[in-house]
Length: 554
Image (tube, rainbow, N blue to C red; front, side, top):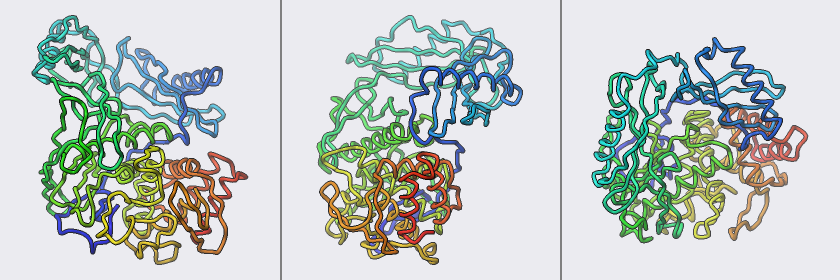
């Protein structure tokens, strides 16, 4: 995401995905994953049982291929049902009766129940060198308690009686026997603290540790969204702006520093120092309080996480349940916001106060996080027509995040970045989905030369398509905002709503688009997605075809 270069400040180049000012290419490696077209809580009753039975049979039939040995057993964690009848059965595994960290796998079944393949967290052997510990249970418990005290210096009252559990750690490299211990307690102010520690059960070496703290319910006075709820982490007598319910997503202050770049290689000089607050009421709603922008950023990531999880069944940007993090207050008067896949993080400038205010609005957050989703799915090249589709994907999904939030202080619309622009920008928003050419740069209709445009302008074709598909052509008022969306062929298009737009675009992105998809390919991909979701004879399928024709993509 960016604005015209004429408004950009002179800043160091940063290799990012979808920067607001820089148009550097996406450099992230993809994670291949098939995505369900809609969220599912699991197939009910007999259908679920049948899917589990077929998946278990497939495990047996393909045991050698999947590394499933007689010493292992599997427990079903979830069953996801696709609209076409396909099923995806997720198993946790044990080895010799011990839980295996990294032993989870997903078996994919076609609609007729036949085996289509499987995805494994760990692809190697799950067998550790030994299953009998050499390190006593008490040693592991003491190590966990000591580490908790070190991590939370105020944790004077660590509860006794932590019960280490033997597990197999197969998350990376050679599987090893480990003690998994959760130490918990309270700090000097009575706040709960907890830490899970993984100890090598043969050598006593510390393997890993992670927070295991109760969620603290807080709130924040944001700059753009009013007072918003926040899930934070209580630790060491204070509260951290880190959300344990959303993969430990957190927000830190970059202290107005910038990264140091040499060509395409950048080094962070702006680490995100995790924000803390004593009373769990964050920000004042004003720029003067540095926590205010952090509230907006955290709220944006929380809302985007919820949108992808609750609407599309995707937990986290990479679909792996892991959170990202935010850096706010980056640089000096920095008119930019960007996603970097290398750090799995988002960065927000404060703006110069003339062109932009702080770039932490809800649709910008949704836009930037969606660059991460694209990099972990289709990985659309950031140039030519595929680059326009990359940018449009973030505009489309960021817009849908804003609508999903239902925030009265920042209501849903089809304007991109309208909350961050200042009168000095000269326009009401960065981009306009109903008629992209309103920004004087973007393309409303496809032509043979559209791929030579900057990707933030060639994105207009897909943005226009998305608006038409959701709302239809012509003049109308939606949520108090006036729009007028003409078609390129003079046709009339009837919209099918935002929900259908989101489902179709997300499935096309995660299942059918590739790094080199063009606009013609996007038409094919979205029609295939509409077929999967609604059928070829459906109103939705016909609307997708009509909306693409209306922007001259055939």
